[in-house]
Image (cartoon, rainbow, N blue to C red; front, side, top):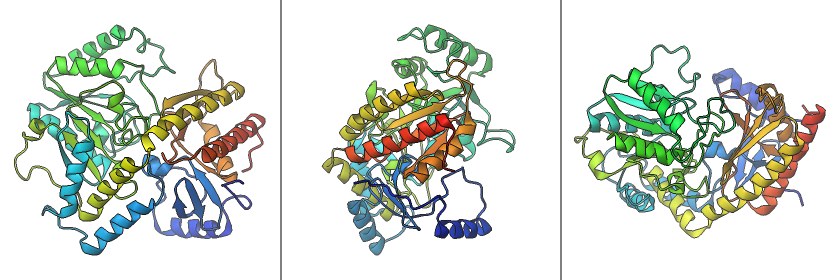
Length: 445
């Protein structure tokens, strides 16, 4: 029996009415999505206001790892909300429990955390920690990186859209290329485990740009917004060695990569990366706004009382969510399911790529993958014009997908970690059908 079911072309009548109403009042500045108004969701299945059901490969942008509206998460946050909503910096029972639970779940070398509200807040906090701890102001960051849309986080990023038209970024950012195995004209991905050509260029770039005030490095274990670009194995470990060999602090931005998304609880566990600072968001609350910055105690010791705060950070409801989510991870085999289902999905998608002349690359690990579309597989010229029709076509057949990428030509494969074998197979069948229609240019749009 099929899980997804769509009655007629989208948007349905109720969705269309609500979308028209929405755009009359709220600024239409979000990215392109399928023309669907969500009504409810459970696990991996979304229901819209017209009663259509969809399988979800968006996961609220890598947020709802435990599935939509997990009953334990809902119950625990409801209980907390009925008791106490906010108390700013005063201690509360849930916040204390959440801090203890999170630290015990972190890689062992990280023994302190601080709660905030968003991923941007967490990366802003990381930049302040690196500067305050070192007494310096320059940060090494990477082309294609995305660390948020606030001032310092956008400045550390390597994509133009969060900064375009907003004037000068925060000074002191030194940006170098991020190795991309699919697009590697300069050979940055060659020569592992030393990657000599890459690190010679990195050294040169720092030498001609730094004023001698380099505080640290911020890097994603894979670049999500740039198109789910995964560096070659060993590169991140070499970067850690390079940074620590120069006395620099290493921040790894796991706002979207953590909580089992890559098949390990933390992405840095794949290569035993000893990050000095870790930024955490999205799946930490699985829909409840909460984020955190984690570090060694001696890193946090550089701050005096009152030097870091957040109006809503550590509130009882968000803190209850942190604990509830970790309860679910302890009771359900989500990280292992991510690894298992990820291998299966990637294999089938790779088989589809062989048959689809426009699907140039399938990459990723665990339940995070990118499907990069090109006009021609030999030239690898990006084909962003295929993406919107593909999003709508998949939705019309019961699969919700989203897009990313520096060229706007990558489809995100990021379902909840609770996805079942039946849901995996049906969603892959829908995608395979969409790719066949893509080849024949017979989209149902």
